[in-house]
Amino acid sequence: MLFAFSFIFSQKATISISHTVTYDSISVLPDSILITNMTQGGDTTLYGSDTTLVLDYTVGMNEYQINHDDFIVKPNYPNPFKEQTNFDVILPGAGHLVIKVYDVVSRELANFSASYPSGKHEFLFTGGKEGLYIINVAYNNKMSSIKIYSLGDGNNQSCEIIHISSSASLTNKLVKSINSFGYTFGDQLRSIVFYQALTDTTVYTPTQDTIIQIGFQSPTSCPSSFTDTRDNHVYSAVQIGTQCWMSENLAYLPSVSPSGSGSDTIPYYYVYGYQGTDVNAAKATSNYQTYGVVYNWPAAMAGEASSDSVPSGVQGICLNGWHLPSDEEWKIIEGEVDSQYVYPDLEWDGTGWRGTDAGGNLKETGTTHWYSPNTGATNSSDFTALPGGYRGYYGSFLKVGDYAYFWSSTGGNTSYAWSRGLTYNSASVSRYGYYNDGGFSVRCLRD
Image (cartoon, rainbow, N blue to C red; front, side):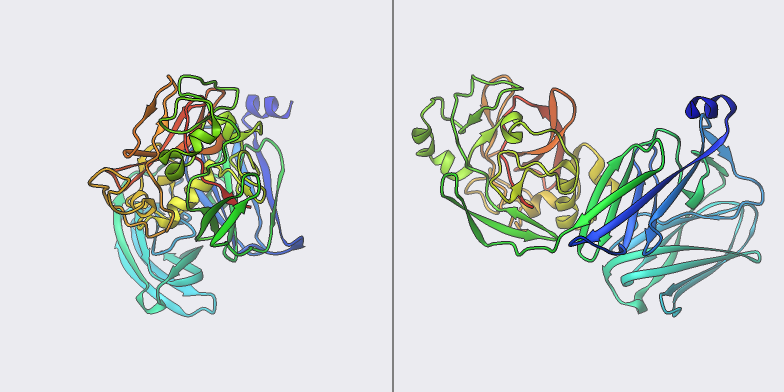
């Protein structure tokens, strides 16, 4: 009834999004919380004790016109950032801008001064050690500030503000709201909570006051090797950022089928090129020993429900203490190893081939297994991705030496799930939804 009443009369309403954070079951204050509107774009960041975002919206309203006396400094993007971040200043009329950057003890680190006409003006901030900064913007005797958080390792003396572009438009799409966060009832949001070196991601669609509960655990060391007690197979592992990944493909094989047999609801297990049903014979093949097992999505999930959480909470086909990574967890490793796009940059929310060199930094070097030229391969992450090929949904083994494909725990709909792909002639990483009866490799992530 509240929704219908608000819609009919175009009344303003609010939704409160609160975050509670624990570390080893003890309440703590997060370093920052990045909240992104996944439906319309745009984000805002909360810091320290400021863990609640109030969404102020009017149902049914699609845009607003900035008043002639509106002076707005929009939240920066991305935030947090490593090297550079952008922010916009909207001026209702011509005037003089003075922009200064301060650290948490009020030391001035950078300043900028110039006159501009009315409109939107985009600025770039570069540099800064890890920590919180304040950007103060003065305009015609008015003052506005935003807080930014750097994850970088620069030095304060190198901080710089640069003017990038100007636009005469004064129309803002979306509904104006508290914290300058564009929101319309029904939008999907994403909260990424940062605490020390840990992150946790929650995706949700708030329809009423909502509490997001985040529980962090003390990180455990990433083993150089470990044993799957189900079959005594020994694996290697590697620490990449805050994540501990298997550095070889899962090889657990409870049964095996020829490529012509398959289902999008019943688990199937394959070994590339093997067309029989004898597990021992399949394990004796060089493809099994090099590339492990190819699983359809039901086999990878082992009957569990789709998840896009961090961590996914889906053990799936993985051994105890490890889990099948979610689509969001794949984005984290991509942002960690790419030289240009840091997680949670919106680059990683796209489909198709994304990033600059994340794929190359995940691939095994050389052409022992990958076809030439194995573009951009450095394996700087020690992830050692191998081109194990895949089982196509129509029942054939394809592209060994050419492609590596990996499942996530995140379903796209009832017929496909999100996956990651690497190839011999690109340094990027692909993100596609593929049919559940297809067969891909699995890399497990430590809980």
